[in-house]
Amino acid sequence: MKDPRDVLIAPVISEKTYALLEQNVYVFKVHPSASKPEIRKAVEEIFEVTVTNVNTLNRKGKYRRNRRNNTLGKRADTKRAIVTLAEGDSIEIFET
Image (cartoon, rainbow, N blue to C red; front, side, top):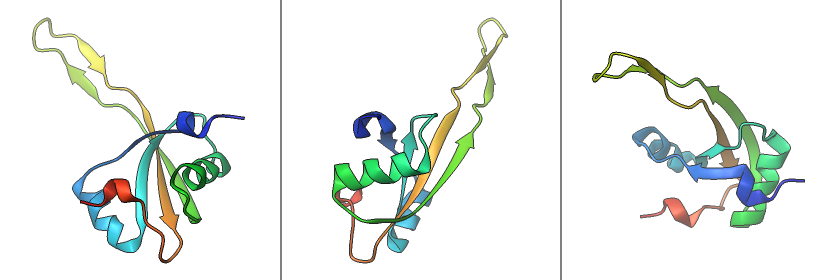
C-alpha cells in the first residue's frame, strides 16, 4: 500500500486546468505506477472530498536539442490524473 502523499506529486497549473475548475475537475501529476483506485483514495484522504471519476494519461517527454554541444536531451515522461469531484466539493489549493 502506497502513502497517499507518494501517489500525488503536484497539481498541474495551466490555463486549461483553470478552465476545468468550473466543471469541478482537477488535474494532478501522479506517480507513474499509480492506479486509478490508488489515485481516488489518495485525493479523498488528503483533501477530504468525494471523487466521482478518475481519468489518467501518460505523457511522453519531449526531445530537446542542447544548443551548446548539439546533443539531444529528453524531458521526463509524466503521468497525469484528471479527477472529477462530487457536486459541492472543492479543493482549496486551486482557489485564488
